[in-house]
Image 1 (cartoon, helix red, strand yellow):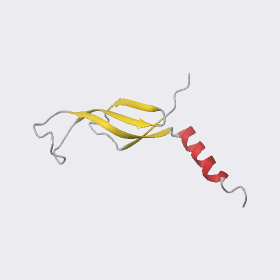
Image 2 (tube, rainbow, N blue to C red):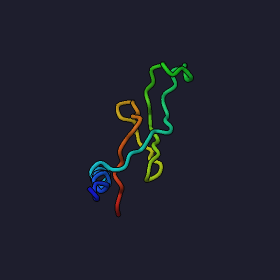
Image 3 (cartoon, helix red, strand yellow):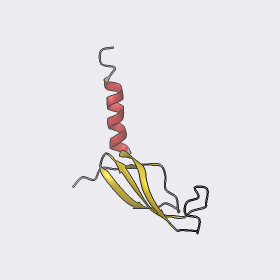
Image 4 (cartoon, one colour):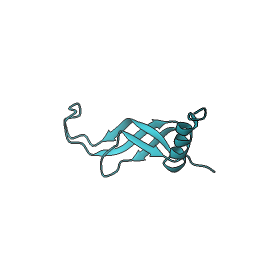
Length: 77
């Protein structure tokens, strides 16, 4: 019982090792369809910028969409 706190710590370490660190979208660029300020307008996103533990990550969109949360592996040199 005394070492149960290690379970979430180890689970977090394994998650980061296999999936990477979570990043949240902070900005994106999309093709303007003439209705830029309408949140319900159909958009095709060009690129997405994510913020997370490893800093900002700017990547091209996937099939014209930006996910709200994305996992990035930590690059080691």
